[in-house]
Image (tube, rainbow, N blue to C red; front, side, top):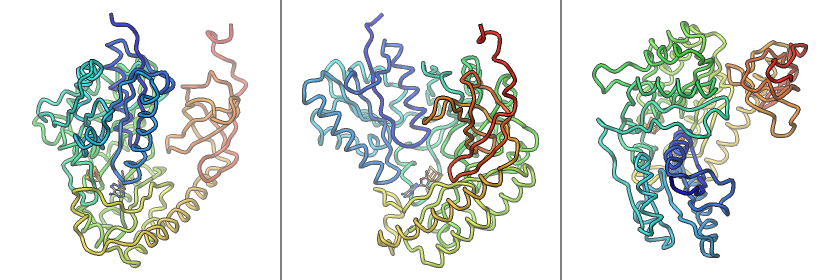
Length: 453
Ligand code: 5AD
Ligand code: SF4
């Protein structure tokens, strides 16, 4: 048994990176690593990086600068860069930062123990090879931190076979591979055994799950399998591609109560001309038809999306189409971004890149309208009784519990800590832009026997 060492992981970007960081922790724990609360206490600092937009990449460089300073001022620490920037920049990072010890891309995660061992022994390590898709070694070790929270991510695929013209992901994460459904179900069981209630299945394009592997389940079939695991109270998934959202998945919304009434379905733009230039392979009309079907199957479904504004060649008219789609669907929330040119992506070579000031004005307009829609949605919940899966105390007040409805609305209400991990009825009293406030409906219930001694 090796002595205990401390690892600090700074995670940037999406859920896939959060998941990879959890898998890195899980594997390093086998070599005696425990989590450091603070980088100044760490023997190993890993930055798990994101390159989806230029801003994310810049954030990583400034954080790396701070960690390198710790080393410069005498802390004996090994520093590694992992994730999408590592994959994209590879050796350039080692050349640029002489005190950087380790660089590995997303496909290095299954090998992290060996990479760290070598790096800590003083060898500068670089691993940006993509692994064979057919035998891709998805990591099954469970994060030592799992079970501390109500929800957990479970990866169902890696990489992406789409080539949306703005997107760097296929370059940084490689082609798509589906994880065997038996492994997915086993991980879900292991998490539920640790007390996890809400499972979020993650992949870059979950709807194409299993299609390349003969005999594998489809994504819809996988949903049924996961819902059948005893103890799973809620299932979410991300990310869906509107082109591939099949009727079998829509049917699952009729059949599976555990499937939450919230779907994140990135649309990117409301203009068919721009969707074509993005190579999204669906039209606004197709997207709206999918929304109709989903609402037919699950009338209370809350829809969220991603938008990119200021894509090359986007005219004011195109942007008006995006605004009208926002209103027509009535998204309850969205992530919206100014188009950011990424190295090697096809959109880089498109004509008519827009000035930042135009992108900024469009983003502000879209986000202002989105906030109004979010507020209207939260206000529409006022007076209703909702079922809240309690996640933990609110950040501002330990006497206030915070949780989410199945539609993903955030609800804060006064209540005791023993409610964490339970689904409780709450009457919503106020709706705000980002959350709601309410009152727990059964406060006369006493604490469970094992807690009230
Ligand atoms: N510029 C701006 N936004 C982007 N996204 C992906 N690539 C870019 C880019 N180059 C956004 C998309 C995607 C989300 C994860 O990030 O909206 O759905
Ligand atoms: Fe990127 Fe498109 Fe793949 Fe999503 S579906 S990861 S936006 S290429």
